[in-house]
Length: 305
Image (spheres, one colour):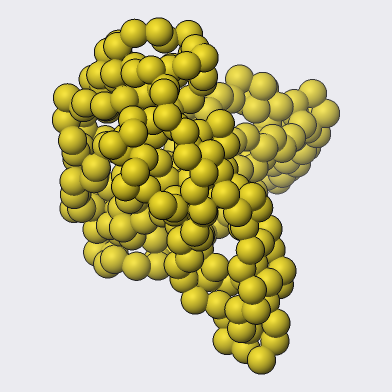
């Protein structure tokens, strides 16, 4: 009499196992596991207020695996990726990308797994404001005195990047202006070569600029001198520097022109130059002086020592 229950128990266990196997089979057939890759915004946690993180990407690529029904409804907000900067010091650093996903999913891959970046101390300083004249005044007119509502502005950001800034530029379009005028112009930052510097804040971001438009009555031909800065690489010597054209005609008030015998170019940085190079460079004009030629070509000839 005791054998019958044991046989029934064994049969029940076998039936249960078969049911589980069948269920897994059906689920894999009807709702198979699939993979999906998504760009997930990368959070930065525990960043000190006194430093700024540089070279950190906005997002990372995350690949997950899970049942198709879950993957279809998955969105970016369901996944979190972040790096923890707690305890890191200034300079180059590496941090692991941490990723949190729903419990029902499997994390397959995070790309990149680690982030190389730099922590830079936040600093601020004053830089001068300068108008960059664009466009053309009517024939016979020139830009005279330029007046700024603020001679300098405050620039703030990573100290290493901040050190490259030399001035804040305001583009002023004089096209068609026949009389004195004032405008509120946005500012941009440039380095010693006139290249824009991004990633810094400017306070205030705009300045008011007033320009006097004066008649052109005097002209003068003056020489051009290159403003050379920097050092050539080791083993390279400077052979020759030539300018094309060597002279330009300037116009303006007679009292200003009589004090000008030559014009300098904007700084020409020769650092890293190891072969003959031609660079288009802007000329530096005093206020009240204009020329139909605003740039020249500086030809730098080098030779091996």
